[in-house]
Image 1 (cartoon, rainbow, N blue to C red):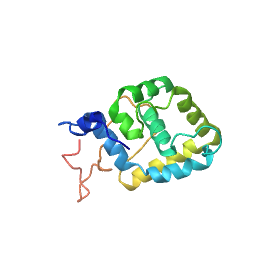
Image 2: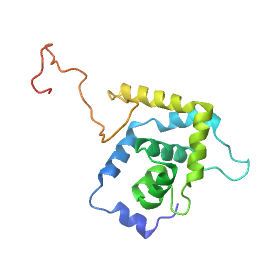
Image 3: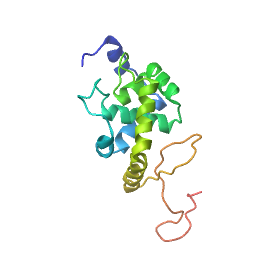
Image 4: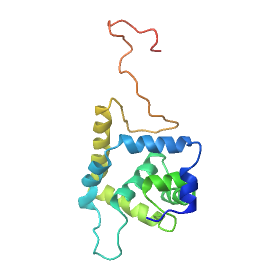
Length: 162
């Protein structure tokens, strides 16, 4: 892939935004290869019409959409507007997934059922790292490592755990 002046300028930025830091942490936390293998059987393969988007990239778009509770149109807009999201999803301007592609991927996961498998795989993977993932509404969330108990090593209530 050929790098542009915009790529070089982006990489030379002095400060990372909160979104960039969350995307970096998400990249590190999730077992992307394992997730892709879970859904590969349900996705189109090359050779049947137009070349499909890379499965890894499409899955990342889907995850960002779910994490931020975005509509298909809003997800498409985010891909057009935000460089850090494009980098996370492996997307380049001019090759952005449109709302119909995003919708079709979502429907494919619903129709064949691997969405629940993805959720359980992510939940188990995060639990192995001492993190908890729950289904529900997210208003403002952060990934935080925390103890599971308010008691210290002696079994007494720890005054620092409030």
